[in-house]
Image (cartoon, rainbow, N blue to C red; front, side):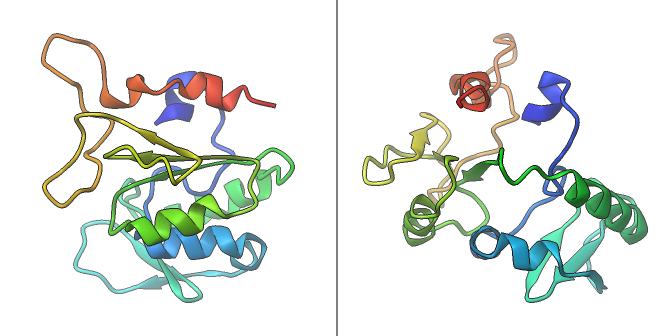
Length: 166
């Protein structure tokens, strides 16, 4: 969503899809390994493609077919600039405090964890106040705060400033 808003080219294969929290962490912990693996379609009851990348599952909810998802994935993997990575983790999809702690320890220079409550022990965290779901996770940050505000929940964070960090 952020890249779309800024009119930037999608240089990340993780745009328009999602992982369960533990799988995303595993992906980031072993990025080089997983980027070399082939996507394999798996059967699913979802109305969008689901694939395995070795032992992690990826949900391509904005794609109409596995072939489209695979071609887009491969194209974007080729665009990755490993010297200029910005990684964002949103406290969703089963994200526990332990997962956030492990994410905080990853050696990425530019990382951000968007959380539902203040977590000062997670150095890279930023709380989006008012977004906590009953399960403690962050709501969909693309939703608007109110009918007439014109402001989405994600707009509380200065993501442009984050992306401009050197």
